[in-house]
Length: 166
Image (cartoon, rainbow, N blue to C red; front, top):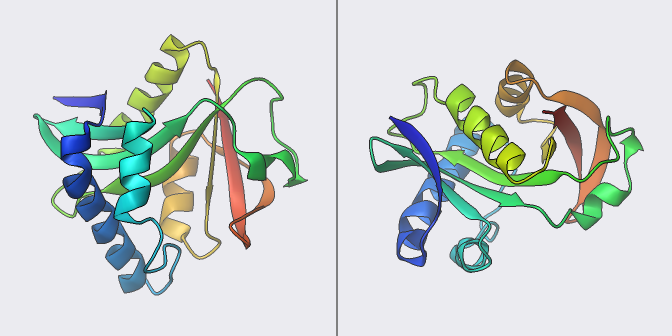
């Protein structure tokens, strides 16, 4: 059974380990989206303490980690392109699947659970971004109903922006 739950601070190290696996996976694909210092363990702890860090559980084992925020993303205020909705949205950052679960087709369940969670919280639009070189994530997003909206700049780097109306 696959579920999505708020992460507990006691899970921070394991969540960071999954982020680090994602960082290494990106490098094996030939690009660097997450540098050595971002996201850091401190970033993950802050996500969790703010109530925005979530774990994807596969039979009660942590299979993935993400950030889901409902307070907007300042970098999304300016886009070279157009969002498909001006309504309140949830922002998704730091999506990572454990090496132990990658390739098992759980991304659809993951994004379905995120969508259900957001709808249950009265939010019917999701926004996310990824690196131009991260073709695999772009494919996963499009496969899961996200649409390209344009280009945003976050932390000094241009990214491909996507959204999904629920």
